[in-house]
Amino acid sequence: MALLASGQCVELREITLRDKPQQMLAASPKATVPVLVLPHGDVIDESLEIMHWALEQSDSQGLLSADTNQCAAIIDQQYDKTFKHWLDRYKYHIAYPQQARNWYRQRCEETLLMIEQQLGVQAFLFGDVPGLADVALMPFVRQFANVDLDWFNSAPYPHTINWLKHWLQHEWFIHSMEKFPLWTEESETICFGKF
Image (cartoon, rainbow, N blue to C red; front, side, top):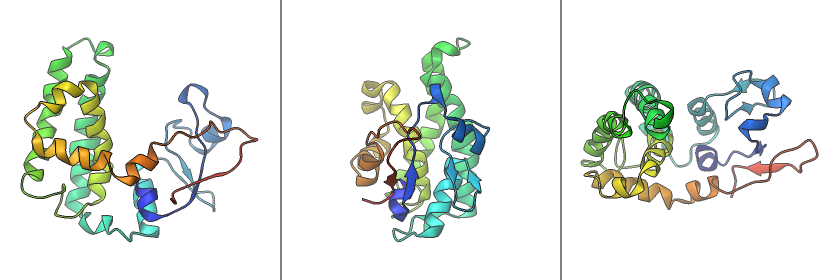
């Protein structure tokens, strides 16, 4: 979504994690996605860092204007570390039998309550205009919602539900979810990041 917001065209190589191409493993031994290889060979393999890179190239939507040091710390600590930890256990609760799925959901709800409180006083997470945090955190909230969509849609988080609906209908999200053919050495170049 940040690539689309910035209008940066990158060569997209769609892969499956079950069959990682050697070129990806050579670029980033972490073997996780996304991986961005810059023209001069530097590699960025963290989502938030790729978002920053894209928006530092062009931020006509002003997504970085709401991005303060406090915002970055909250994204890192509260969402990337805490919420993501419990979200993985909620989504894949069978792999984490130490607790019931609802117990993991309640841990996630501690973060969801913070989001709900923020959205109760402003339209977006850190103000009245969208910021990097909204684009960075929406996929996590979407994953949380999709574990049990009926429960989520009836949960006592009306501001969060409406915020998520806004982003699910946004052209950046819709375009980012398009399916692309798997990349092979013979594939035609796919430019992603421009409409």
